[in-house]
Image 1: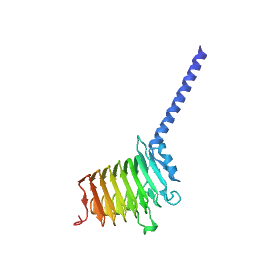
Image 2: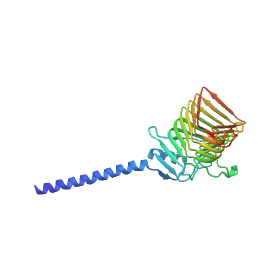
Image 3: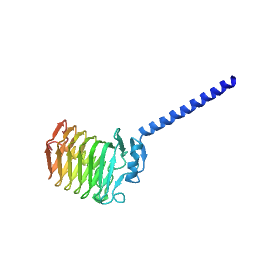
Image 4: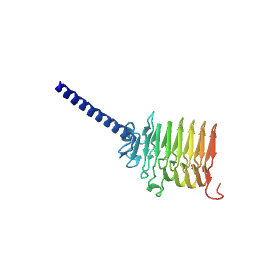
Length: 275
């Protein structure tokens, strides 16, 4: 009888130990999937593979979707989680996606792009373009399709969140996007479109809040024969500010508003007499 009691106590102790280990492993799994993972992006496909593994990814370098990663016809998709938000963090040390050479990047589902800071571009006299996304050159494109995206706390000289330049195209459709707390030292607190490029919002809900540009376009700057299109979309512009053009600064370019609603509240021009 005594031996049976000892055996039962041993089994109970073993079971408790194994349950504790199981709960500890479960804790580690939950913890690792809620805390940021610092990663070194070696390729576009490697970045994509990280998405199911964690909800918050901090980068150790920039995501260069040009040169040896893309080809002239490359199309890659950043597919966020269907049920939760995937966050990419630039840690204020790196720019995000650079799309060139005729490449295309698609963003879909739930994804946040935050805390990116544009790095020096030697080809453009060291100007800093597009903290989170920079798309440049003819036939280069970015598409947000069926996306729920938040671009926040990004920094650049031109287009703190997104810069589209040199005959490039950006299409946002069937999506909900929020641009908040982005800041540009020159033009385009959130978005910069220049040099015969096109930005189109189609069947999209947009919020621009607390973005700033020291010079032109607190929310959006459009320049040099470019196009900005709102088609069947709803947009809210709140508390954006700039030296000139608290929300929009449109220079030698066109803005088309088709069956869309734009709401403006408490946006501010910081230079007297600049409109």
